[in-house]
Image 1 (cartoon, rainbow over the protein chains, first blue to last red):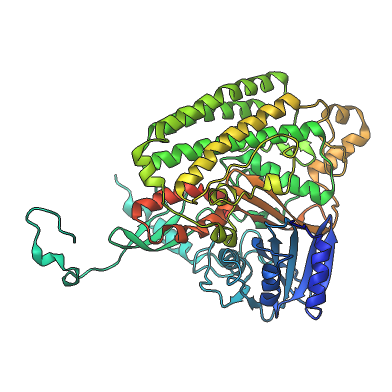
Image 2 (cartoon, each protein chain N blue to C red):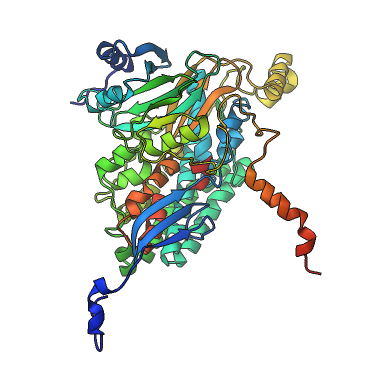
Length: 180
Length: 407
């Protein structure tokens, strides 16, 4: 008999087991997000994955969020789902700005690999023990982290992407290349 | 080098005497078979793929960053362009997420219409998948037949909302305008003859020896691996896991019509093909049931803060005029504060929107969890150990759209 747990119940279990790590529980429109410290995130995720009543075997999504005013600037949000019991929970790990790193959960869900690469690409959050942490959506030599709130929408005005300079260089010599 | 027959050089039978080297080739971003701008670097040992490294990001347009600077109504055209093959489905996904965030209840008729257009988008997307997948494998006739049906669906979309590709028809709170009875009749006629067309496509390739040899046993992924990697849609259903967001987390009217989730057994390319062929039939049946059961009523919710009021009231009532003006020029001024993750089933898999709202009319963070992004990350696992020709079969079978992957 597969018993779907209420999200608040799962949050209670996490609080009971990892009472030092939990910083808060948000409940909005029947979805629950548990804010935790980043230190034992792998243990928490492994508990949620392996526990037979919770069994979060599906990592729906892993992303970063930027809150510039806060003490912990970044958050890594894990949206977990259980295919067996059909219940959902979210875990938000708080990450400070001066040391934006957190352990990788690739060992638990291999699908986290590319999601973590994207979070690193867009926010600069380093995932320790990640097998291959390099830029994924942006070119490898891009500088800056676009999804941070202090990154302008149209890109930094004074600096342009390096490779464009090569292209502009070539364009100044257009006359040499035209066939008459 | 094996003994090839008459007059084979006996000295060359011993492989260790030939110096070999791995060959690295580039299946570049411009390639007719990669379905978009996907770059694969393949390390080959002869014909066998030793390592496959995908490079994406050629179509990255910064949709998530743009969404932070636009109000909720202005993001709908951005969602059109995610999976540009099935724009209606993306719109429905986004609207369902935002409606849950705001707590808006969508009227019945609009739910039925949304389900109908989402299933039409599914049929249209799978038609394109079938045509291009078969074309890549050499079966060129299927392409033309699939596009004949696709034209009919796109014509219906054009009659409905004016656009074939970038529809922006489902809106927050319902749909933009009502459907007329002639449109529903034409759609019903389409669904009557469509099962015969599906059979036509199947007669072209289903029992074909070359097709079977190229797809059976190729690109096998087990159920545990699929769940662990976060695959969704027909890819995970081909491996036997009956995970369909429309059944697990129903939205629209999917829980009120009778339909089944097709699943495969072996997790190879052939099973994924079969799953999608059966999804044609299920989508067809869903559309028919929705047309037969569609109630009358309004197609937009009553929520003046977020939803545009009907045009005839705007012209006569000053309050409605003010609402209309403010919503168009400034967008929703306030929204409930909070965060949600809502998933819907688009033709490619599970499309998830994680929206963080800070109370203003613009999302603080809008994260788009796209199925193609996750599926391309599974490509190395599918391709490694197989032959070069199987890479093309695998890319076709996971049905990716780079617009969705790169956002």
